[in-house]
Image (cartoon, rainbow, N blue to C red; front, top):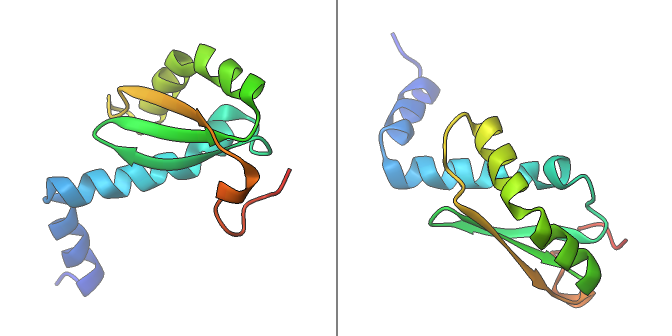
Amino acid sequence: MENAGQILKGLIENLPAARDMIEGNRLLEMWNEVADRNDLSWPVKFSSGILFVASEDPSFAQELRMKRMQFVEEFNRRARKNIVKDVKITVCGRSKRPQGEKDG
């Protein structure tokens, strides 16, 4: 007999929107590992195959932009499927950093 957790997991895995949302959250959590620098950038959201990332430093944002296809490949490798199509980097001040994030 399946427990409630197994049943819920089965339901979620069969709902594409829920599955995509869960995978998107996993990608956001992986940003620090993949980018290897969490003091100057942070993930914002994942939507329609695009990972949105913010950086408080314009030159660092440019460095990230040059590596964006490497990030796409690494995220897809870790996810074991082609879920990320692109990574969009924006420059955003410290005041926009999510609560609890490292201040640099």
